[in-house]
View 1 (cartoon, rainbow, N blue to C red):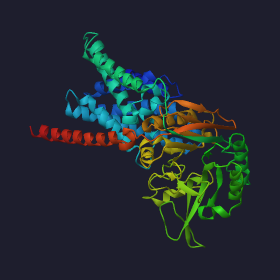
View 2 (cartoon, one colour; view 1 turned 60 degrees about the vertical axis):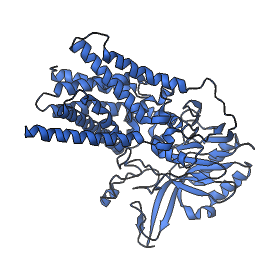
View 3 (cartoon, rainbow, N blue to C red; view 1 turned 180 degrees about the horizontal axis):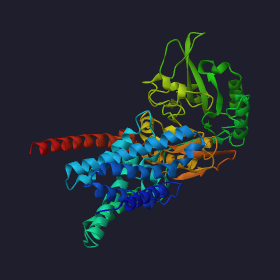
View 4 (cartoon, rainbow, N blue to C red; view 1 turned 120 degrees about the vertical axis):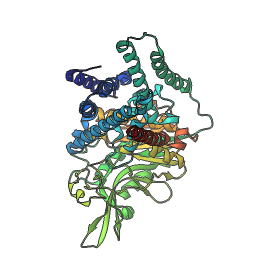
Length: 533
């Protein structure tokens, strides 16, 4: 191959477009993802023997991945331009560097299997991207299938990394087949076409075998939930000066009255439904809590799970989120919390653990404290919020997993809640920040992945649209519309069976890092030996 600069940019353009239009709700033409990396693989091969080939590849892949990031997540700028810029620039850079690392490794080891090193290198990147301050796993390749749940029932064994591997394997086979047919002029029917066919068909067959013709829940306990979508404008109402928790809760309870009855077990409200911050230890003395108690008395046996902005006080610095109050000589921390009010016993809180970089958390401010001054004000708080150090669940008659907004794209985080006994999952969120865009639709669809991975029903309450219910196969049982007041009730089975993924979490990420380490050692040894010759 000897591509011109124009041809290389054309390949970059093709890759960026293919990846963008195959992602959910920015095209949703999912099958095209299986050829989305093929142009980049041809670029890598063409530039392998050229001077400055690595630099040119970086430039071309940056162009392709920037198109991918902009084409799929442009809506982030609706809520935070700085946050969007951070996501676009950094995420594109990381993707480009990952592909460049693959190119350099392949060029160094020069073996017939070198192309397959893309799998552990890319999966290691996605795994790393789940576990640092600039975490942004929205574009994890396995998320492409959130609207094709019948294709990926085997996520209960692999999680989304299994989907990422599937995409990369098919792309590599497609590349090898196209190269053999149109460049090396080999026969149409060869081993690479066979590999492409099998890598596409076998996962589909496995998935279809996991889908039931009929679903029975023999012996299962059923739980009756009521979901409220109050539809409060996050920009002009929810956090506006002069608004009160009583006012917003009254709107919430007015909607709840239309659906709650004597059979209801739990009423679920969205993230920051109690939007004005309060000190957790003083909850039961606050006027809005009196309103909560009075309304819950009318429900019968129903309990309440609802989002709240909360504060805790400390005598000493508790974490990097602690802010000192000089006059009172105490520290305070703000949280994005879930409040659980049982029918019997004391109310309790669980704080959100996975924070949105740049909005709820200032990246690396634990290393560089001055970065807190650059905090983006959003939702009535500024700077880094406090977090729970590990996933937690609420324990009462049943065990409930509270999942707040961004946490719902972290499969391993939720699997740890299921390991603690959670029998269903609740996602509470406020997707109104992004406007009527693909953002809230993508976020809604990602809940289907958590349902399949853990074989648990998911109940989702959004401030505005979409709220809904998913069964353990990721199929939508109920969904609401965007920018509408809504309330509905639904009965869900409480499931006990632990999936393989629930037990073992992101083990594929661990294995990929191990394999990447071995590849790195192999490459280094090969370079050293070649220099001795």
